[in-house]
Picture 1 (cartoon, rainbow, N blue to C red):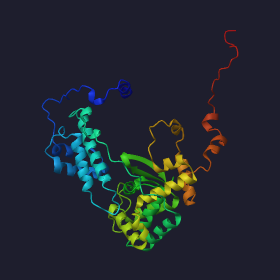
Picture 2: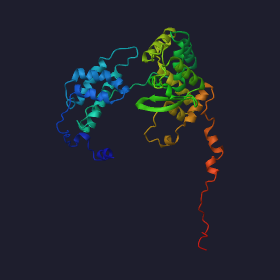
Picture 3: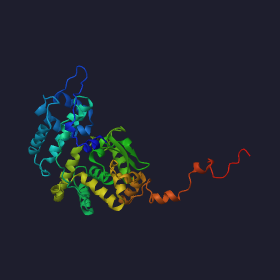
Length: 365
């Protein structure tokens, strides 16, 4: 509302008078070397992993500068330096991603600085630096024959094909991200309802349907390789050591040696996510694909989307259609079941509701 009023009055933010932030008594504005470790300790492990490289660059370049010293122009120049010095890999796209991540790392720092009242929100230099335009992703859904070839190579090569096939099936069925798969432990499995609890981005959790075959395979894998703790990571090597990110790198490097197009296109586990979600969208519905992916509901102006949230039962039905295995939670036609279901026992079992009518009241006669 304030922004719209300022626009009508033709007033820019920079034209407004600003007052200095009143720091708590005895507190001074810290330098980056002092403040970045505090921010790193406050964020999630995923955020810390994403920004660690860029925070290290900031400390190397500006470690002894106070937070209120850099200007938007200096941050922009810093981002260009990072872009030009980005490591050239096969999937390099001009260093735009490196520059984008540096600016995001700055914004994270200053978000906390504003919250700590070290600087005023209007003096935040990172928000006045535009991120580079993000290029469209090169990932896309894999055709069925390509997915079959990947599964075949994974199952016939390597030092632990059973593990690799389990990882692939887990991702094909759930369309989860790598981090979510690595975070699964035994207590996250509900074999009775064929569900797995996924720990995903933004510290969110959600139940995702899995087939009875996968549920049984995950339990057998845990029984054979785990240390017996319900809190321990589920995916493990034969010796009991938890699987890490390197197993995924090894898996795709190995598959790329047998299927050159996998290496050329830089295919990773995230392509499996694209494949499954595309199949659900094309064969079931976009609303179910949205729920299947675990995406948060949009906060835009599409009010209709508020009423089109897919249920867990619908996601289970999509999985059932994908795998060809019956799922205990799947409803073949949820709307038909809704309108043809018998009344619930508590509704007809003696609870009488008084209904007012237009008839003349009889009391008092």
